[in-house]
Length: 519
Image (cartoon, rainbow, N blue to C red; front, side, top):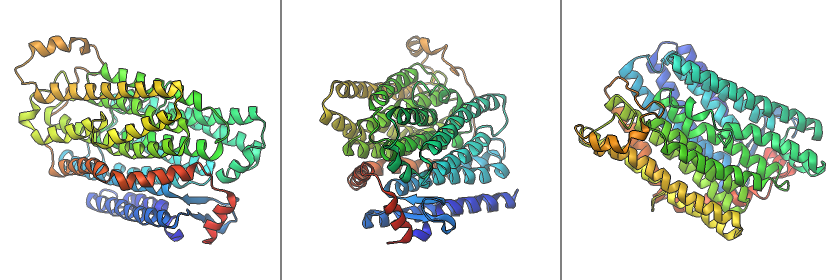
């Protein structure tokens, strides 16, 4: 099985090269991208089943270098699960973009650029998830940064260039912080291998550990969009093409959350900044959802809910119990899939109605009942209505908090419930205005929503376009997957519980060497 591990990175990288060589041959590029992501999905499924059955991780030392001197690619249950979920999301969004490209040509997603860059993006995501040392985690982030900057500015409109510049500046600041933190850690413990760092960190003075801890949290907090480091996200994502926005919303912040999970459980399990994380998580939840309620444009509403729901994951990490970590992993999987699905459905709304402003879109229930269903199901799921996966994940987090019983845990439960209700309010208000409001019904609704007239992008109008069947099919497939998260919640949650138990029992360097040796 260890021979399969490097393929998670090399396949999308080779796919990018082939797609670039194919140039303007659209069908070749599409075929290569689909084959690569489908193969990666199969490999991740095999690895997840194998590592869960064997109850031991798989590791490869690239180039045959002895651990910890070489590059170690490390796959445990968490890595395999996230690679699997990521490959599914990337494949669904790719199919959506194929339909959009076929209908619109190269205006939104130029295929010559899009497919190679998309494969590079996948390479960065998978590299980050299976990196066994901090430097290659940094490399994964930088691959993401380069690819995402190209994708976010596709079309070269003024708004995309402007938000792209903001995105790249903020990302570079995060990368610089991360690189400085890596240099400081190497200077302090003499290695960048995460498993060796974990063994040597306890030997450092407490003050040094805290400084290193804070540096990494700042770097990852920007990437994960944790308040107050989340200011860049709501203005960056909505201007990108619909497929790009969907994959960014679903995956990129979760790579930052993943990095926080790894460092908190592997490197700083005994260095307690949990109270700081809890406060940041509470602020992220509440301020993010208040921002969503004040928006009139669907992509901005979803962008603020994205920020808000990152707070649930950060709080689960801060509780730092096996139950809370398992609940966090389940909620992360749920959020990746549901948030991506919502952005895809909004992409359909934009094409059908010619706008994403809830003040401008009307009468879609009669005009587009299929889109109504494709928006409604993930919306109530994200809002946490039972029996959907959003409810299951939040209930598990609340239960883990209640078991701790401290006052701040009770505050989190109350804030989490309020955030969930406000999420439901923001998404159902958009549903009511966009789908149920008749085209000639304006007086009463205008009075109720007058306060939104001054919201950003409240008057945005775009061109109405035909919706290819493959775009609807890709979105419907993702909606079906959100339902599957509920139907198969039991087996999935059991895997997440095992992940939580394993993460709080950090892997030693000797165990990694045994995994590399296959013993």
